[in-house]
Image: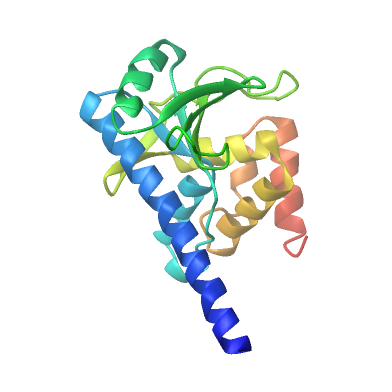
Length: 195
């Protein structure tokens, strides 16, 4: 019975990961088809970069996060609603629910390029031009992604940064690329790899 429960849990986890992947592909395909500039950010962008070095080091994520330009929001809304997403703005967060009955956890989250996510942040979100093609969609460039992760610096951001350090995407020269506060954060992660 215990083996069955373990297989059932594994099957649910695989389904959850696949749902996130499908949400990512459906949303980015819609934006690509509409010719709207965007970049994948967050955990999916980290996965894309880590995967290029070591597929076995990839960490699953629950979120689909995109950066767009605020002036494109109306066009983004039309494109995403055409493939089943529902626009919602709640508690200052812009998201597209994956269907009318979806929970906020099942959404594509949007932040706006050139704007700070929080007023206290050192850096604003990067522009969509700071992106690279990856498979069928665009991801934030590594340097811009690291800047975002250093700016928000939550526990999951530190974990993502450590993942990138572990596979060799980042090294001791990287702190020189960032302003003092962000450089100090990255240096701390380099100096304390085990957290």
